[in-house]
Length: 124
Length: 380
Image (cartoon, rainbow over all chains, first blue to last red; front, side, top):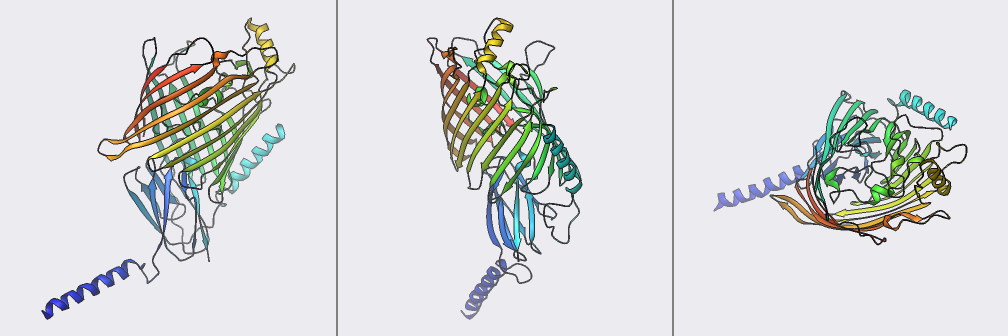
């Protein structure tokens, strides 16, 4: 039975380590804060997100109608938000320093597409 | 208004100069800016209308192509070309080919941006948000037809932006309406100049404040004000004012909407008298037009293999003869009620198959025919 118990203990340790790793960003940072954002013609809600420099945020995006895009200007973040009922998409963003980062819909979604913009306000 | 246009010109120039630098504190290091890109999208609206006691009509109501181009992150172009009723020929009354939008957006900050070109009046729910899958009913609401003349577009320029957690604004100067084309039945609708060599002797002012900060909720307040009697000046002018408020709430399966709009036309008596002199028939334009509607919709089927199915009911009241100038009698057939009931099937969120039945009533002794409507609309 001893090998069995060792195996169980090893399994628990592995699960604990895995859960710890999954909650920790690379580099030993704290886990990302989750922000749920809904997109619909022609707005993001919320359209203003606040965070701190160096802290990662996990932006979970869901559409209430057609497919939209989510792009943070001057960064590499650009994801396609699937249509209503087709699930969510997650964009992870860790601002290196304070400032205001503009995000926008990057997939043309209708006559008011240009209004779909928002801001991530990053403080110290 | 010359100083106003001078101000806009200066603002546009300043924007062009500063657009590349202002706006946000960029992160470091910066990835390369995305290259210019051009996109094509559009929507279509195909209808079958069967009025009581009359033959049905098949109509490819709208074929709309949207062309967009991104010169940079700060400078965008949007164009919308619409063919209505599928066919345009010479001077005969048939379809219309319209340039509904063609503007440049100078994006400065989230709170302040400049737009110029052919723009949509920021009034009401439907005028700026009219893709077929996003509203219940085959035809647009009556309020958005004879009180707010959607699609309402004209040449103009102005500013727009958003502050805080979802408070938006738009403020534009646009070409005014032409009061000589107002009518008893359709109010100010015929007066749209549509940016076609539009008279801009005295430009109109329009704007909207909108709250979108709560998930599912949009609440707006719009206005439009312009001196629209350029065909009658200097004898008299026709100041026109529109005030509108609306609310839309959508959560999961439920969607609720309400809208109220009122138009005031000054010197409507002189407009009617002159119309009588010119043509022998008074246009019988009212001094106040008013309309509102309430709508409730519920998606009874979601997540199914055939898509989503929603049912709805809308009550509308529109009166384009609500208050008449002294000495003019209202035409009661233009004081109208409508109950619209039906359903929409979305096999895809961008495709809508619609059916509805519209019960029309008016205050005259002559009953209006009810209408059975079917529609197919899609966005791509």
